Image (cartoon, rainbow, N blue to C red):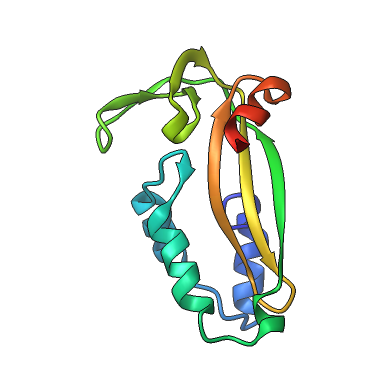
Length: 133
């Protein structure tokens, strides 16, 4: 919300909604370093987080959402490769530039949502099957 509508973000902060200061949000976004594919550290965190919760708190739905992204190539110093190419995580990279990203999310019925992973793909009609299998 901070980037989509800064005015709304500031308005909600003025209404005493407990939101982090903008500099904190910018810091989080700048420090986020996620690669496409399943993030094992995050999955382990979810396991630990839900290990001792009641059954109803562990019940969730898995969502798939495709988002459009700008076709753009950029060198990543953190990972030492060019981002913007098709990337299916452990299933490999291809030399096709991407214009969409498939995101998997677990939404708890009694708990908040968490992104599980993402894959970058040119077209999801054929690529979706290879990413999920």
